[in-house]
Length: 510
Image (cartoon, rainbow, N blue to C red; front, side, top):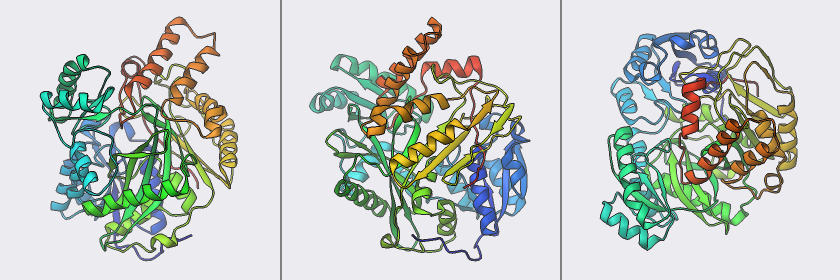
C-alpha cells in the first residue's frame, strides 16, 4: 500500500485551531513531519495535553467557546504573532466556517482544508442537493432548493409521508422536523423556519423523503490542486444515538463490491464537479435494497478518520498538509489498497443506560496495550470533564485481518480500558459489540436505541426516573430521523444543565 513521502515540509510552522484529542492527533503528525507547531487554548484548557505537546501555545480567551475556539480574530492574531504559515482546524469549531477560511487567506495564511468557495457550495444543503444532482448522484425524493410553505405542501403530498423538513443552512440537527401527515406540515414548517433563522440567520428550508431504518455510509475522498482525486474507501457509521455516531467501521460489509464501486464513483463525481480539494467525506443513506442516496458532504477531517488510516496505512493529516502546501497526491487510485478490517468506538462521559452526560474528575487511567489497537485521546489522571465543550474523551480503534478479529480486539481492549472517577459509555459499546444484529452486520441507524432499551430492561436496579430518561433518549433517537440529523435531545440539554456536559480527547499511540 502507498506511503506518504517523507521530505522537507513546505510549511515550517502550523497552528492547530482546536483542542482535545484531535489537536493532539494533528500535533503528532506535525512533529513527525518536522513542522513546528502552535497550540491555542482557553483559560479552561491551560493544563490540557495539546498545550503541553505543542512547541508553542497561545491563550486566546476565556472558557466559553464563543470567546476562544470560535474567536476567529484571536486565532488569526495568534498565527500572525507566532509566524505560523498555515492553520489546521481539525473538526468542529471553525473547521467549516467559510468566513474564517476567507479571512485566513486575506491574512496570507494557508488553511489546511478546502477553499472557502468549495466549502460554501456544500454548506447550503439545498444547494448541495442541486449540485449533487448535476453531478449525477442519486437523491432521495425531495425539493431541489428552498421552498415556500405552499410549494412544500404540494411537494410533500407528491413525495408521500413521512417526510423531513430541513434547514438549508442546517447543522447539528437544528431546524429538522419529521412529519407524518399533511396536517402536521404547517406547524413543522413554522418551527423549522424559526429554529433555522435563530441558529443560522436563514429561514430557508427544503423537503426530503424520510427513509425508514437506513444505513449511514460515507466515502472518504482526497483531491489535490493538480486535478487528481481518489477515494479511500467507505465507512459504515450506522451505530448512532441521537444521530451522533458511536461506532464506525470499514469496510461496510452489508454492501456488495459492485454497489461499493458505484458509491465511490458517485463521490468522486461530486468532488470533480465542485472543484473540491483536500480531504472530504461524501455521506450516503442506504436502504434495505442497498440503493444509496446522497445526503451531504462534510468539508473537513472526520472524527472517524483513524478507521481509514488503519486499513490503508496512510496518514491523512500529513496528506492534508501536503495538499494544502501545493503538492500533488503521491499516488493514484490503483496504488491504494485496503487491508483487513478496522472498527472504532467513541468513549463519552455519559451514563450508558440513560445516555445522559455526566461530569467528574478522572482519578485513575489505564489504557489497554495491543499491537492492533490505537487510542486517540487527551485524557490523563486528574483530567476533569469540562462543561464548556463537546464530550468525546477517547477513540479506541481496532484492526483485524477480518471483521470478527477486529471486533474481538476491540472488545478485549475495552475490557482493559480502566477509567475511574468518571462514568462512561463503555458498557453500552460492549453491548453493541455482543449484539446479534451487529455481529451479523444487519444493523442500521435504528439499532442502537433498541439496544439501549434492552440494557434498561436488563437493569432492574434503575429508578423509575432513570427508566423514563432511557425511554426518552431511545425514542428521541428513533423519531429524530436519520437524514443527517444530529439533534440535541431535550434529555441531552437537561443533562448539560443539571450535570455539566463536556468534550475532549488525547493523542494515543498507533
